[in-house]
Length: 518
Ligand code: F6P
Image (cartoon, rainbow, N blue to C red):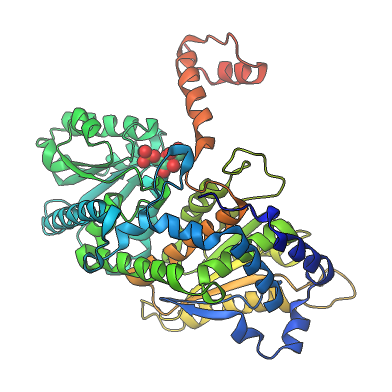
C-alpha cells in the first residue's frame, strides 16, 4: 500500500534536469510573452473555485514532469486507498475517512464502508436536529465552544466566514487556550441560564480543554446554573469520558476522523448552530463536490493535484520555505490559522512512512493576514525582500454588503498586488527597484457561501494529501505535538514545589523566575 517516495522515482531525475536547465532561471514575464495560451493552460475551474496558477514559476512542461513523478509515485492508488478506507494512517493503524462525512445519504457506499456511513448519517441527523432545536430556543443567547487545535480552528474560522448566513440572536465564543485570561474574559459577559457550552475534544483528554471545561462547569454551578444536560454538550469520540465528566448530551465521531479534518463531523456543531441544518449540509455538499473532483478528474485537470505538485516544485526545487495566504475578505480572517494546522501538522514531518530520514524539505511555513491589511505590514518584504515567498490570493467576486465603492477597491488591490509581484519595476537607483517574477496563485470564489467554503477547504485538504503522498510521509499523524505535552506534565508541579532537580540550567532558571512570589 506504500507509495513510492518522489525522490526514488525515475521521473524525479528528469524533473531535476528540467529545473537545472529551465526552472532555475524561469521568468514568467517572458513565458507570458511567448505563450498566448498560458493563462488558459494554467488556470482552471473546479467545483465552486476558479484558480489561476499562471503567475507561478512553471510551464506546461514542468507540470507534465511533475505529473510523471506523481504517477510513478502511485498518487492515484494512494488516493483511492484513502477513499476506500484502507489504513493509510499506518503509525496509528487508522483509516482516513473525513471524505465519508461529506458523502450525501443518496450516495451510500456498499461493502466495508456501509456500516460507518450509516453511523455518520444517523449522527449527522441527530446533531442537526439538536442544532435546530437550540437555534429556536431564544433563551440560549451565547454558545461557548471549548476546544483546541482541530476542535477549535475549523468551527471558529467557518462561523466567522459564514457570519452573513447566521441567524441573529446568538453570540458565538471560542475558548481554546489554557490561559485563564481567555475563559475568564468570556465568562464575565455570560449568564448561566442563557449559555450553552460545547466541550469539543476528539480524545476528551486534551489538557487545555479539560482544564477549561472543568472551570466552565464550576463557574456554571457557582453562578447558580441548573440543568447541566441542557447547558453542556460534548463533541467527542470518547463518549464514555464525556459521560464520566457529567455531560449527557453527546455527539460522537470516529477515530478515522483526524482532528484537523474534523469540522465536518460533530465538531462542526457550532457551525450548524450558526448557519442552520441546511447551511451545514451545504458546506458538506461543497466539500463533497471537491472530493469527487479529486477522486475522478484526470490528474492534468485535477486542481488539488496541480496545487500539490506546485508545492513540491517550490519546496524541493526552488527551495522556498514559506507560503503566504492572503484572503481578500475579512470574514476569512482565521483562514490562515486554520490552514496552518491543516498543512503544517499534516506535512511537517522528517521521516517517511518507513521511518527513514528524508533528505528533502517537507511542509513550508504558512502564514498570512487578510488583504489589504497585509499590504501595509509585510508586503514590502514580499516585493523587495531577499527571499521569495509564493503568495496565495483568495478573492470573492460578489460582496455581501452594500457599502458603495468598497468591493471594487478591495478587488483592485488584490489584482494589483499579484500584478506588481510579477511585473516588478526597474529602477537603476535601486531603492525603487522591484525585481518582479515573484509567484502567486489567485483563487476566485463567486460568492462566499457554505458550499464554496466547503469546496475550498476540501481543495486544500487534498492538495496537502498530494504533496504528502509524493513526499512519502504519513500526513495523518502528529507525534510531534506529544513531547511538549509530556514535559509540561512534569514541569507543572515543579512550579509549585520549586524542584528543579534534573532540569537543564535554562529551564531551571526560567522556572525559578516564573514561580509566584511567596
Ligand atoms: O495536540 C495536537 C492535537 O492532537 C491536534 O491534532 C488536535 O486537533 C488537538 O490536539 C485537539 O485534540 P482533541 O480534539 O483530542 O482535544
